[in-house]
Image 1: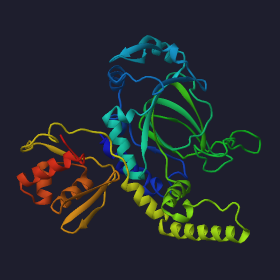
Image 2: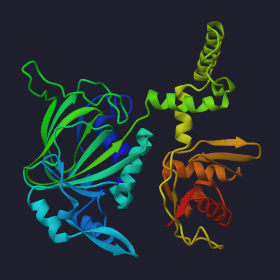
Image 3: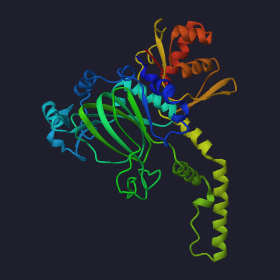
Image 4: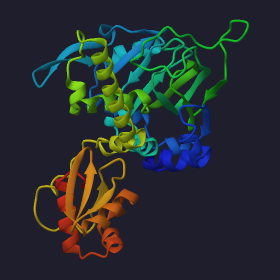
Length: 400
C-alpha cells in the first residue's frame, strides 16, 4: 500500500510528472489513476463510522445538500448538550433516511480528524507550498448535491469508494476568479450552439484522481451507486496577496502615514503624490514577489500535535522511539555565529550547531528512529536524547 504521507509528492508525481503539479498547476486539468491500493489507506467505511461516532461533527462542518440546496439541519440533527454546552447532534436514522433519498453528505476538514488523510494533506502542502484542506463527499444513486459551479480554490479530487460522474467545462467568462472578488456574475463556457462546453467527461473509479483548477466550471452527479471521494483544496498566492502584504509595510513609511493634502495647492499635492509613488516603487522592488513567497513559507503553520510525555519529563528516550518532524515545509537552517537559526511558523529559534544535522535529516526523511538519527548525525545516544527532547519541547518534533 502507498504511504499516505507520499501520496502526492511520490505517487501522483510519478504518474503525471512533477511539472504538472508545479509549473502547470492551476492552469490545466489532469486525470491520473493512482490505483485503488494507493487510496485504500486513506479512509474506509469503518473509519468514517468511527469518526462520526467519536468526533460527533455538527453543522456546518457536517452538512447535507440535495439538488443544489442545503438540507435543513433539523431534518437530520437534534439539539443536545456535551460538557454543558448546547450543540447539534446528528441522528443516525435521520442521516440514513436523507442519504437514501438522494442527499449528499459533506464533511469539511476531515484531514484534522483522521491521521491518514492528514498525512496526505500535509504531503500536498509540501508539494504546492500552500495551505490545504480535505473534505469528504458521500452520495448514493444518481442524484446531485450541487448545481454546475466553480470553486474559488484549486482542487485535487480522489475517488475512494464507488463511482461518480464528472463533466468539466473549463474556465468561464472571468479568468482566475477569486473568493473576495469584484465580480461574481461570470458564466460557464459555452459552445457556438449555446450548450455547456465539456473539456472532459467521465466516471471516476476508486484510485482515480483529477485536478480541477480554480475557476473551472464543473457538474458532478452520482453514477447510480454509492460514491465516496475526497476533495483536497488549496488556494495559491496571487498578485493581490503580494500587493496586500506590500501595503501592510507602508505603515512603516512616514510619507504614507501623513494625511493626504486635500486642501493644499496643486503643486504641493503633485509633490506629495510623486513622493508616495517613488517610495512605493522602491518598496515594491525591495519586497519583490520572491521575497514575499519566502516570507510566506517561513510563516507556514504547523499542525497541532502533542508529544507527551517526552516533551515534559526528563530522562532517556525509549530505545525504540521514532522521531517525527513537525514543520510541514522544510525550514532553512542558517548559521548564526556559533549557533544555528531556524524559523518555523513565524518563530525564530537558535540552537547549538550540533542540532543542525538533526533538523536537516528530519526535514528530509520526516520520520526516523533514534538509531537511524544517531547514525546519520554521528551522535551519542545521550546527546541525541537531549537534542530530541529540546526540539519536542519547542513543538518541532514528535516522539512516538
